[in-house]
Length: 509
Image (tube, rainbow, N blue to C red):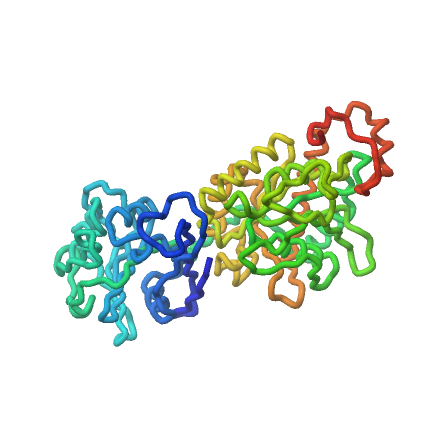
């Protein structure tokens, strides 16, 4: 996803978020989208930076998410409704050869009801190269803003995609009054046509939906709790937490940030990057040290290859199950096309509770919540099913919250007061089937050279929850003979031959 920052009057800014589509062909055509996909691409808006500024100046403090682009999806009413119905507030952006960018905003849904829709917030607008300020036209009082039919968007004075063609019908005086020359230069042919969902960013909750103590004392308290953690089962010496998520979600960056918080300076032990393919290609287990010469924190963070939509790319679910059960050794090289076999060099046949995963953490880029495809959601559903069967608690991390919401970028303390972040947390909770209480917003270090107290508090709070959930996992274990199992105390995650836990311990087989 490409994200553009647009700045406008009063120092406000908003995000313009482009759309991800899939296709079986390298060139886009209106008939292939929605079919099983082999290629992913990003659809970007044709708006220039200057045009973005002017459009946002009439919309306010918002994020624009590109839903529909006619040159990609088709200049038809059916294509428009397929992607734009029931999307909430939207803005139309039409382009013509005369250099005008014009369109309509509505706060209502398109539903093809066949009825006129009144909307006091609706307006038409026009941006032209020769004018510093956009033209904004409010609706005629008492009249419908648009007719909610099966045709292209019909605002009375402007009918877009008229007769399923790249053109408009102009009828000034119907619902809206304007001079045709000022609105579109009397050029009715369209060179492009886009529709964006408009997502408000300016709303701040009167009361945060979670309470966080943003103090130095709280940070030290969290670090002390984490460093003194002891698993409930004597034979287990640290909690093992697995990070799972799409390519580029920020798994490696999260570990580096936690490590930095405990070390007291920026570190980069896990390789992180922005490549289109997974930067992590091995299964890695990382130990965190408290200070440069300090002891190890009783937490092992495990990093994996990123998830990808296609079956032959990214982390294989069968490999994931073997990781859960402790069968995959550190530095095992993933091969998506060939899941690990029992007789392979990287397979640990006799795994103990020390080797298994005690908590699974799904990592999602908050900026890409709206871009999660059905294929990716289906993959998560498959992983969730396997994880639930093994009784492993799960948490979801929303990364990059500062990039997703300008209010949070201005002050991280706004993270639980941002309506936008709360809405995205609920959206993830519903789409992935994870309780909202298990969804945790975080910000990892990316460009900073110095540690930040607020960033550390969010990160350490997430780690504290991981340890709490690991305890829940230990409490659910059924161990027949605790005295016999204590003999495993010497066999801590090494690769020597060791006894195997009881078959009744359901996560190890």
